[in-house]
Length: 375
Image: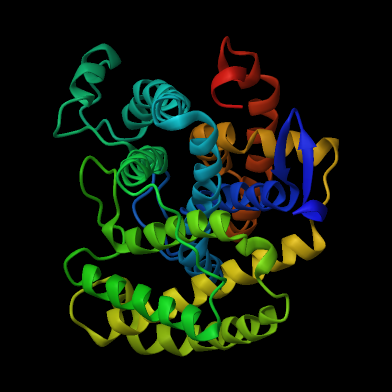
């Protein structure tokens, strides 16, 4: 992997993967920045009574494309680094360090950020915080919120450790040809459709830890990440296939408009419906196409580093941990500002990116032990 890597602090790092993580962090900030201004679900800041059509088109397309790939690609990148870490450390040290890195930030954020947001925005009885706080941790109210990602990362680490303990042999699989990738997309679409019959999109279970509708995407791409590491897929993937999957993506985007016109909100309503069937397969092919195109583009074109990119990459995980209250605060400050809501989306997203990376690097990093745990 010579031309795609660099020796940093004794560890081989994939520069283009670092750069790709930065893009995904920016994506998640803008995704939450758009919730009050587009066709999003329940949110801390209330939506206007009528959402402008331009918002529905622009933010709706952004939401649809994002949900098809970006959290799955996060899981792919995380899983890619699991085998090497396990090989170096062994099961006990690997799992201990993984649980510390994920568990301590999860505990801190669940006991601070989540209840404070709930108290400020979802406290209709207006009880004092000292009374609200203990009740928040009851099974009736408690939820992990946006930290479900950290919970699922921990669960995947546990499952991976179990698999490595029982099946230490390494699967040898060359990078799949188009038939194999298309088969994977069909499999993903099938499982997504079946699960969404009972668990539509944005239905959360187990203390808001899992959204079953997208779980097949996360598990498939996590498995792909492990296989990619073991079989050197990131170098083996040919640049030429980007043209094919770019064409698939372009066609899918064209189909997005008639899909919404025909099915409307039915695409996310679940059930054994044509809308659910069509959207599940649409999302599977779009997500896999975007992942392939992004990996190839970043590997071939954005595989360099520098001081700024290096700092940004180091801050991706803490940015995810702190981004939600920052974005919600920006949205709240923009409520009385008399500008179009689409402009508010771009302002909240852009300012959110600057604030989150700044707060992470210059404030969170200064917290005792934060440097060792989450950076």
